[in-house]
Length: 389
Ligand code: PHB
Image (cartoon, rainbow, N blue to C red; front, side, top):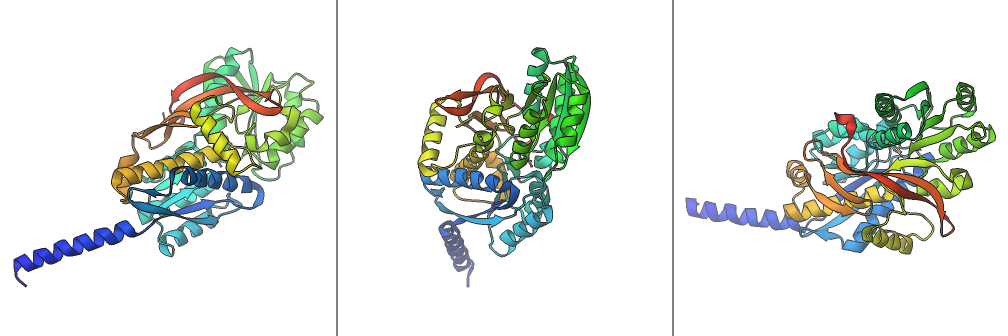
């Protein structure tokens, strides 16, 4: 073969490999808890991802998207999540890792993304440091410090002076407590005590008694939403903390739409800070919630579903920009600085941290048209994760 023939051969090989690559679907490996105590997380995130595809088509940048779902329940066992992510990369040959309901899952999979050179889209897990664990992580949910700082400022401005902190004993709990303490004490508030409850199946009785005895103005709470939250709220009423005049403040995980109906009237009047409410007033959220109810009439749209929806939006927009190329470096470069209007409001992917910048709203639980809703009444726009400062 002369040089010219060689060059023609190379050009042909390149053409064929490009078209073969373009014709392949983009495989997205979703790692989510689909059963056990946090099954609702997997359900909601999957709803969001699928709703995006149902609304916007499933082909972006010339490539069809294919989902491969692995159940990493209970979602708190990092070794399970890690083994499933490795299987997705090695056996299923996925191009992108996504999902991650709880922090231990995201932490455990970060090294798999780094070693396998796969973009990793975190759609819920919210400990601040997660995005620092791999250069290929991008987050479309929130961080606990991002949501805890605004409620701490609100409390300090609204006559609350002494706060008792109760958190779940793991990453997002430590982050919520740390940021609340920092913002609240800087504004002149006092933390009277702090306790950590087990993540799953705790008996809140002894904690509730300790809070009652400490007589704070308010309790600041972070628990991952689920049966534990419902048990805590029941105990809060039954043990007379409410009658004792102790207020309850929290990040919006407490009044998550997925558990709000189960909390019932005990949730009325609760003030929380959060990045998403079903009752958020915007054309984008109206379209989102209408489409959600058409697709899933037995569930309520919540922040986890929106984390999944926006995560899928990010993947779709990146694929358009890269013309279907999922190379981790190129993917992350294309995602940096991306901006769009989510059902929650305007959001940006911080080009430095790859974390989400968004508006945090202060809300109050009210009955609206017969339904308990988080009604937004104040906001902190374009708020970056203060946990990274
Ligand atoms: C987490 O494990 O990171 C987590 C779980 C549920 C939440 C927030 C954070 O509502």
